[in-house]
Length: 596
Ligand code: ATP
Ligand code: MG
Image (cartoon, rainbow, N blue to C red; front, side, top):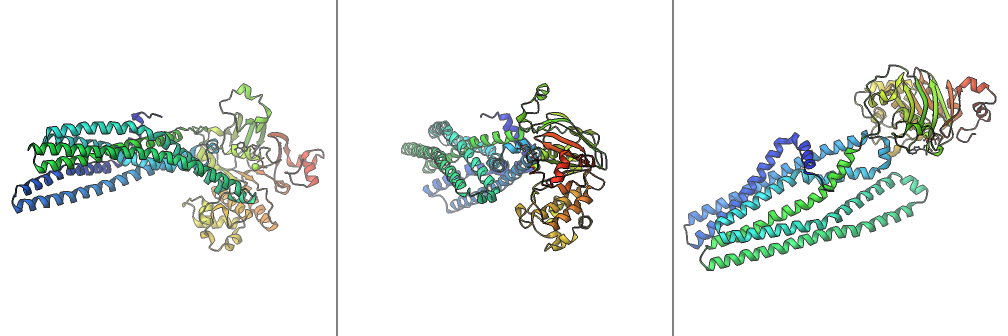
């Protein structure tokens, strides 16, 4: 998983450029604190020598004050460096988080089918978190500590050749040994992050499905899998920690040896009268100071492993291209939009680039829609019937281009649907899905999809037009009523009403209603019927119906069976043909789902 340096570079450049000033400030603060750290022991050495020689009180006092001042200044620079470092890191990672989230939202649904929400969370937050150090500290710390190391060794050489050379040799050995051992911790930590991504994926999925899990008595099963995951997690974590501990222990041992070398060299030189006591102290102090950059460089390079893994995964997500091309520039005409499907073949499974010749003769079980054709003129309404799983909702998804078809042509408003920019398409096609998704926000935000441009007057007028004003008045705080997550607090019927208003506010040219299969009470049903009538006025409509009474307003009827057209024609014609499937359905009067 080696990542070329160019990629690190481009990532750093992309996200650090906007905050160039802060990065420069950070570098200055860090380098200043490094220089001061090297200077300060010199003052202490001078202090010791002056004291031993019985120097004047005044020079001792001066040295003490200078020492304290420099120590304080070092702290000031350290605090500034930490502050700037955190700011840089958070700004850069937040920008990356936004980019990742926006990218994921742009990807087509097949990507989201393949990745659980928890996994994406770990990508967008967990991995990016790991990168925050990379942005703020890694480069500057490795560089800064490299400079500190070189500075210390140079100063030591100036103090005493023997001490300088022997400690330089020690530093080289220590650093290469620690770097050599660093690979020990790579794969355990990679395993750790993998299993933690799995864990959060599991949690996310099961928290979302908690109602079904409880209702189906699957709690024990889920808990068992939860424990199993935890049990797998612990040894992986232990292995990773153990590897890190071995590294830590090695470095502590090494620095003890370093100290011993420094003491031995100083004692020898002092006994030979080659150095003063102050210089002996300096050598010892600088050796101690060596530990910090060596340890830091090791730590940062160890981090680099995790960072590398994170960069790799983040890149992987960023490199996923949406299967949907969004190159079209054709605008949709205003008003109601005609819809035509010409010999549509569609499957959720097969890839888009399948050989079109072979696509004509597919294995029947793989196709969700087979050779489907219909034409719906502008302003007319199509009633779509069919058993569950016959492909009705799939037609709606294709019209919003949540997926692309493998073969055939879909036209909307006279032009090919693939030529319409996605944002415009989704603005002009309104869909009410089977299960309405509500957000944890006010009724207003849920209606406008957080669009502050839509004034309250418009919302209230729309509600009034749709006959929903009494419903709004029944809410405790009107538009400001807070809805819980998972549409808690709203019945299925109320959620449907809300979704209808949502679509109405978009003012689309094509409305698709995917009727909820749940039965509503007659009063809500009447409200919804009324709202639908208003909504369909001067618009093209496709009503996916589970109840026969909702298709009475349709101009055309299409009955699907296993993705194929079973019957298609004018509603009145079909209703008057005694042998048509539609007429039979009307006669028996049973729900479409159970019919046939
Ligand atoms: P219902 O009346 O229950 O809403 P439907 O007619 O709307 O059914 P669709 O949702 O269109 O049915 O599904 C048609 C077929 O496509 C089904 O066999 C279903 O299993 C399959 N299918 C639906 N969504 C997906 C998906 N995201 N990935 C793979 N297969 C899918
Ligand atoms: Mg459906």
